[in-house]
Length: 166
Image 1 (spheres, rainbow, N blue to C red):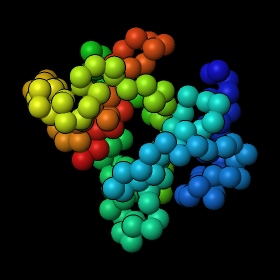
Image 2 (cartoon, rainbow, N blue to C red):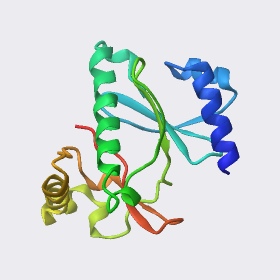
Image 3 (cartoon, rainbow, N blue to C red):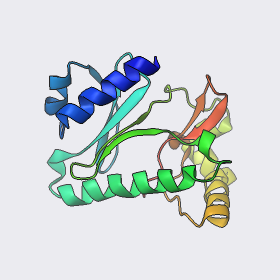
């Protein structure tokens, strides 16, 4: 699988796609998995990779790109702490000009507990507790923590925080 991932990343670096239409030139297929306020996320079919594109239709592309820059900076900074590294996605590619990010894709398996419901997680204070712990130990603020941004990686058996942008 590592060879396929490396080959895909080389194609992405070669084509430097800004949009899903640009991405189609790579020959890889996409499956939309989510959309936030500033970006759209797509699973690269057949690979454990996700690519996030800034929303072109949002009008303020610079703000969308800035959100990508902040997320990548936070993940890289948090990954410096060895205790947090297994709980964060690996970033394979980031283009700070376009805001396109390619990172490890965690299967859409949400945590199968009471905390799978964002409202329940907030009621129990799990989101605030984890955000405070990260802030206390690293000085980095994770503002968009919710149950929707947490996945269980069956392969590594770690719970992973998949989105740390604000």
